[in-house]
Each structure stands twice: as C-alpha cells, then as structure tokens.
Length: 318
Image (cartoon, rainbow, N blue to C red; front, side):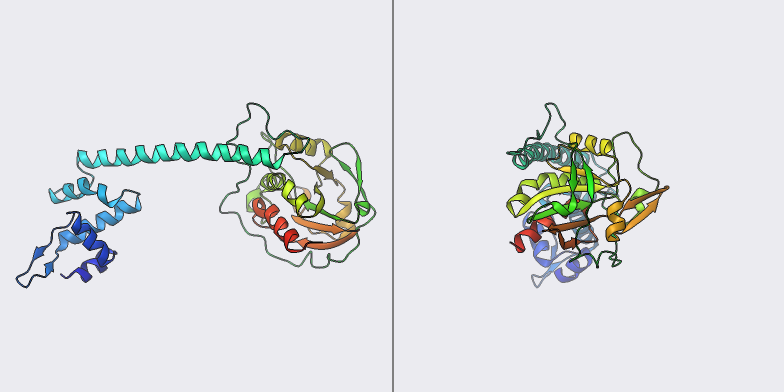
C-alpha cells in the first residue's frame, strides 16, 4: 500500500510516517520503481506508535515495543524491554508530578500571602497543609439554569435590616455607605466531619460554598482595589457556625447570618428546600448607596465567581 493509505488506516499524517521512517522505526520495502510499499505489519507498528504516544511515551522511546511486535509477539508489551519502557515513563512522570506539586505549593503560599497582605487575618497558620485544595469543585456538578428569580432585583432599594456579623457587631444593610458593597449569598458551608444534606451534589448550584468563600478570600484585595468598599458573605446559618468557617478558612471579611431569611422575604430572593431546610440559592448583590446596582444569578462555577465579580468591577468603574 502507499503512504497515504497507511497514514489513513493508522490515523496519522504522512509527515508523521516519514518521521517514523527517519528514525528507523518503519522499514518499508522498495518497489522497482523506487516507491515505498507498506504492508499490514507497518500499519500495526504505526498504530502502536500512536497508541503509545497517547500514553505520553514519545516516538523515540517506542522502539522496544515495536521490536517486540516484530519478533512475533501478539502484544507490544509482551517483552521485558517493553515493561522497562513503561517503568521509565512512569518514573519520569513521577518526577514531573513531584516538581509540579512543589511549584503548586509555593504558588498557593504566595497567593495567600499576597491576598492577605495588609489584612489583620493571618493567611496560614504554622503547620497548615498548603496542599488542601479549597478552590476546586467536582467536574460533573449540574449547572443551575436561569429561572428569572433574580430579574426583578436591579434597581431595588435595600431594606432596613440588621444582621449579625461574625465579628460580633450588627450590620445594617441599608446603611452600607455610598460606595459599592459586594454581598455574596450562598446556601451553606460544610464543615469537616459534618455531613451535607442528602443529594447535595445533585442540586444545581448547591455545591461549592467553601470554594466560593476561598475565591473571595483570595481576590479580596483585588476587589477592594477595583472599587468595592466591602465584601460580605451571607447565609441562613447561625453566626457561631459561620465564625468557625471564617477562622478555619482565614477569611478577611465578615459573614452575615440571616437564619430567618428576612432578606429573602424583603426582596423575594430565590430559595430552595432540601432535607427539611429552606436555603438561599446562590447569588451576589452589588449594592451602591442603598440600591442594588447589579445582580449575579445564577452563579457557576462557584470557585470562579469572585473573579467574575472582579472583572465586572473593573469594567464598570465609578
């Protein structure tokens, strides 16, 4: 067969086939007219090179596998040299992972130091595991749909409502000042060793409160620099529960407790029910001079939401 037919059947380009030949991995027969003639064995070898490449084994290291096939074995990894090739690739990958892990830990430490610079809250307690990944969420979470439940909010006045903050003081929502205040509202944060409601991950928009809080923590200084006068988290959880979260996650802002869901009643905010609980749906309010200037709803993914708010503030300067 010709080179184009081989490339088509093996799922590679003709350029790749010529490269394999230049390395001596393919040795097709030459016809009298000088053309290369490929056979089924060449197709099998080329397919094996491609399969090994998908595993991260470079073309130059496929020779032991191809020699195993050429020797008549059914599988390319039936030979000891092939197994050694796997081990070498695994060892190299392990070294790369260890190097990336060390770089990731250093970046996390640098991020936390930068995010809390000038804050009274310590970014990391001595001995804390920097590799705890609070900012990730499962990849298969259901995406919440926009049901229009927050469409009425922009332009509404914030009600006269006082909520308990995690610093022990009360915060009056209609007296936050003339500047912009970010209030991100969330269902509930989990706590190590405490089970979440049944089916939590299957509820669109429910999972991700801790990653969202950490995202606002890490973007806190940037939000202030972009024009926010303050940032608050708000949920229907009790203040003591929220205070533990603030301390454990080293949040440089307060959480507000609304156990009676008073703000939901005043503004007709969206809620949902699960396991006998009525909880806030996730949304964020930008409040300016006592009026809701902008609303983020629905929010997904929660661990990227603070960056969305930061982008909006930068694109809408005062």
